[in-house]
Length: 348
Ligand code: NAP
Ligand code: ZN
Ligand code: ZN
Image 1: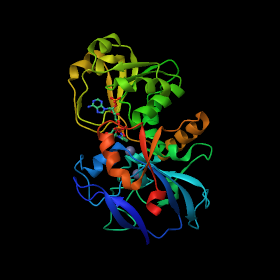
Image 2: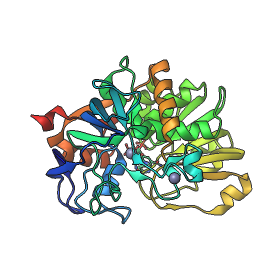
Image 3: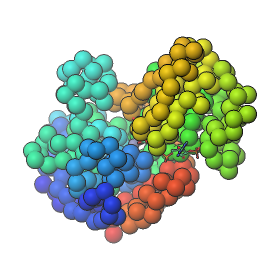
Image 4: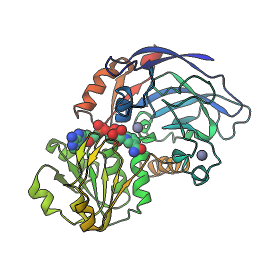
């Protein structure tokens, strides 16, 4: 076991604090990673605050991990010491069920092993701990290859915000010329805008924040739609081929559904209770869909797409010690557009 510095949440209210954890001794199939950067996802905050009623404390959040390989097991193929790698939201799955066989490990019938907050199959009685830490040990099949040509710290958010927005755009076959609305310009939303624009779609940023309009256009949106302006919403009614809903808090979806064309889909990735009257979707014959991160194969495809199209996240760097202020700022909708922790600050 390797003693490892980390930051953890201990209950729903108190600030995150330093916490020492043990990483397992590397198995033959493991990759040991020295963590360089870790993004701060709104899901980390949901878990730290137990918004989903599933948190086991203490929990070390963080599932947007970039690091360098520092050791490989004897059976590891394709990774070498020094390689730049990523780890996203999951670190294992059964590999044999129908979902795993379809490269959808996030839907593993045995339950994926999440990067944090899952029972650790290698350390009975312990939970997995995430990337707010200096090192991690992960099975080679759940380690991603990262291009050296991108800005490394800005790659970290691709491991969750990136794949979570890329995957539904692919699932629903977004193509050049489609009118795509991205709802919410935060960590996920800003990646959704970049990906949809790179796929050739006409992207409309649907936001509650008028001051984000210029940024939305810089990121690739051709227009900005203020969701609390009824006249603007009416003007766009029935015009969208696809909506990607990233809103992280409880909200009413009824104003958004009529934006869709007949039969078209809103994919929801924000994880909160919503209010929805079925009349809107009935009359529009619309699909309200969900989407959960993406499988390992698709995550690698997304990272390769980013290298090819020179896509990274827009990041604000913080030290590990600043994590509690960063949480406050994400909750008050004040981040452009993803906080990333420089893990050097914890190694010190
Ligand atoms: P974030 O950075 O906080 O961004 C969310 C954005 O939603 C905000 O920037 C804001 O954009 C908009 N928003 C906030 N409050 C709103 C409200 N009351 N009404 C309407 N819009 C509001 O969060 P994130 O990291 O992108 O995560 C978004 C959600 O996705 C979270 O619930 C997270 O847990 C979830 N998530 C899901 C998956 C998955 O696999 N499905 C993966 C990762 C994260 P504007 O200022 O533009 O309105
Ligand atoms: Zn996440
Ligand atoms: Zn499985």
